[in-house]
Amino acid sequence: MDFIKHRLRQQIVVNDIYTCYYFEQSNREQYIAESHDFWEIVYVDKGEVNANTGSGYYRLNQGNILVHSPNEFHQLESTGSKAPNLFIVTFRCDDEAMGFFDENKLFRIGRDEHAVLARLMKEGLDSFGLNQYPITPRPDAAFASEQLFKLYLEQLLILIIRRARTGGQQAGRLLSTTTENQSAHMGQRIIAYLERHLSDKVTLDSLSAEFSMSRTQLNILFKRTVGMGIIAYLNRLRIERAKAYIREEFYNLTEIANLLGYSSVHYFSRHFKQTVGMTPSEYARTIKARGGE
Image (tube, rainbow, N blue to C red; front, side, top):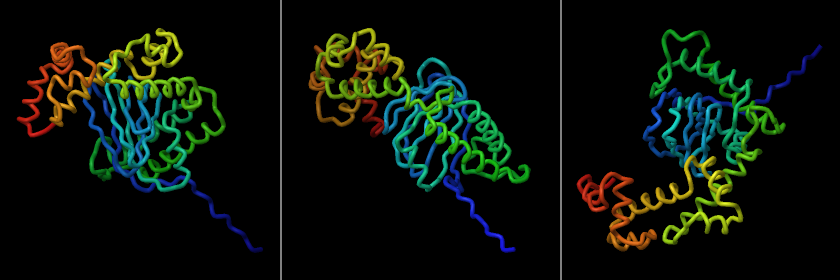
């Protein structure tokens, strides 16, 4: 009798990893913005953190996973509230199925995914220890621990895609199919509007009229998505733009104040010092002394 074999299909295969970290961060951690040509998953084991990415601005709470595509800009930002514990893995996978994560980014895991994550973290610890760079295999690693790490990572990615495609409505549902994603989309629209109107007198009343929502509803939606109120976020945008203008040295302080909608250079300077801890002039001298920020 001739036996006919069937070659098993593998739709997600991970053969290379770059980093495997477990961080216990403060609630005021400073994070570095980055992009790289491989995938990254960020899992919030405890606490909360914000993520500013090329695909949008996200609030990550305990149980969320965010997936960064290759070459996508991303930066974590502290919320100033709950200190986060983060599990982060970066890896290479060139399979077509990973294209799913180019459009779907933020997920809340269920029990199945949580169990796989626990095993993934354990095998990472057994295989090479967490927070090692470059990855260095442990000489006392258990038999085939690296292979199990690979399998658990692949299993996690597969489970996330499966749940999303079946429209799972339990704890592990895809956030992009929920009201939370609609809030995130509206939050991004508001942010884009604020960035275009930094020189204008923007108020909650004017935003309420622009987006056809009540002031209270608008502010609650924005705060739930971004982690702060609209006016606080607008003030932060203006200060960050002011710092960029100062570094670029195209405008003097009076011109910068006008460009950013301040009623006077004195009010601008006072607001800048309250936020940055130094006056605009002191900030400019500091930048020059450092040779750039």
